[in-house]
Length: 69
Image 1 (cartoon, rainbow, N blue to C red):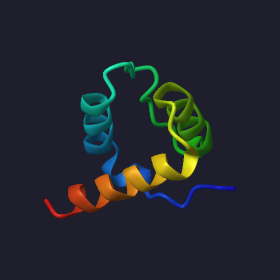
Image 2 (tube, one colour):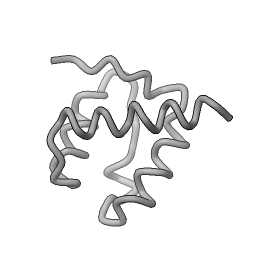
Image 3 (cartoon, helix red, strand yellow):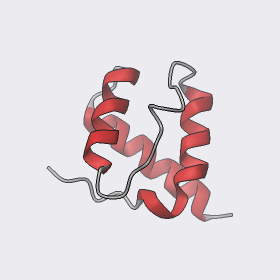
Image 4 (spheres, one colour):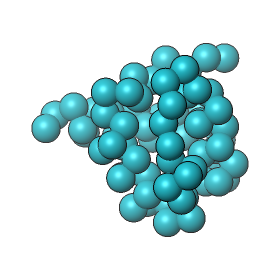
């Protein structure tokens, strides 16, 4: 299933928040490439040991927080 998360616009803020919450994530793990969102989410799911839907919900919440700035 393709992700519908609008990562591109707020990726820097989301990346920083994810790195704070999950210190095991490296800069390489958090590289955003347009069109490769599914691979990024797969990698994050493996590294965080979170179910895909839970991870997507977490990112959705971070998007809400970052879009209010």
